[in-house]
Length: 456
Image (cartoon, rainbow, N blue to C red; front, side, top):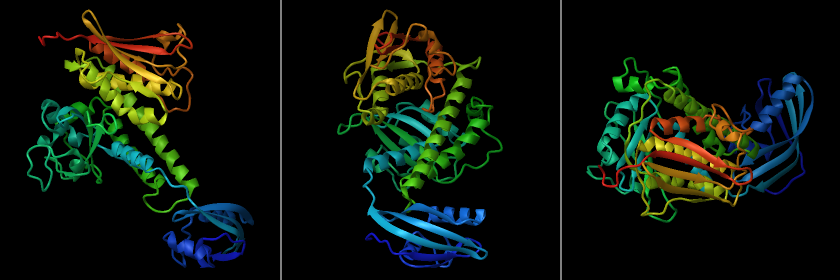
C-alpha cells in the first residue's frame, strides 16, 4: 500500500462500535476480521477510542497495526461526542514487515508443545524408553509402566490409531501422530524432538504427550497417581497451577508467532512478555516441587548402571539450541567415550542440565563450556567448566544455599537449582562441589559412585 497523507474519517457509536469508515481504514477493519458496523478489530485503535471516550477528552496519538505482511503506522485524532467518537487519520503509511526467522518460529512452537505436555520421556537412538515422568495424574499409570519397561520402544505402551506396525516407525512419521492411551478418553498427540548434532543421526529423543482437551477431574486417583501427587507442592497445588499456566504460555506463543492472524509488533511483544513470564512461573513451580521432593524424609533415588558420558552428551544436545543462539560451544564427551556409574539416569541428567544451563547464563558470548569425565577411585566425576566471571572463595559454599542467586536479577531463576542439585547428588551417594576463582571461570564437579567395569 503506498504512503498517503490524505485524511481518512471514521465514526463510532456509544458502544465503541465502528459504524462508518473511509478507505484505507475500512479495508483494514475487514481484513482484521471485523465488520461494518462492528467491534473495532484493530487493537491499538480500539484502545485509543476507549480511552478518549472514558476521559471525555480529544486524543491524538500515533498507532501501529499489522495488515497482512505490512506494518501500518498512522496519526489518529479522536473527538469524543455524546453518541460516540469522530476519528480522523493522517499520514497513513505501510511498509513490509521483516521476514521472521522460520527457525525461531519452529522453536517457539516446540516450546509451546513442551509446556502443555502432560508426559515427558527420554528415548535412546532406537526410540527405547530411558525414563518417563507424568505431569498429571491421568498419565501417571502410563509413566509408571514406561519406567518399569525401560529399554522397550515407547510405542509398546500406547496405541497409534491406523498403524499395526509392531516396531517404532521413523521418528518423523511419529512426530505429531495421534496417540491413544489406555484408561484415558482424551485424544493425545506425540511430539518427538531429536537430540544430537544438526545433520547427524539423532543420538536420542525427547518425547512429549499433550492433548488439546483439558484434563477431567479425577475423584478417586490411583495409588500410583496419588504417590506422584503426594510429591507435588501441597499435594495439589502444582498440577492445578501447571496446566492453566501452560495453556496461557501456549496461547501467548501462538499469538506471538502470528499463527492466529495479523498482529502489530507492539502486541506481539506483549504476547512474548506473557509467554516469558509464564515460563518463569512454571520453572519456579518445578523448582519448588523438586525442593519439596528432595527435602522429604523418605526421599530416595533409583540407582542403576548408567554411562555418564551418554548422560553428558544428552544434556549437551538438549541445550544445543540455546548455546548456538549465544555463540557458545559445548565441548561434550565424544562418541565412544564412556564412564560407567551407579546412579539414577534422570537425576544425573537433571543436575547436568542445571550445571550446563547455569554455565550458559554466566559464560560470555563466543566462549566455550567443557564437560569432562574422570574416575577417582570408587567415584566417577563429571566436570562442567565455563569461562565466566568465576567465584571468590567466600561464594563457594554460598552458591549452594537455598534461593541464592549471587546478585543476578531479571533472569527468572529461583536460586534453587544448585541447592536441589547438591541434594540429589548426595542422595545418590555422591556430592556436588565447585572450584573457582574470580576471572577464571568455574568448575562444578558432580561425583557419583563408579560402576564395576565388569558389570558386577
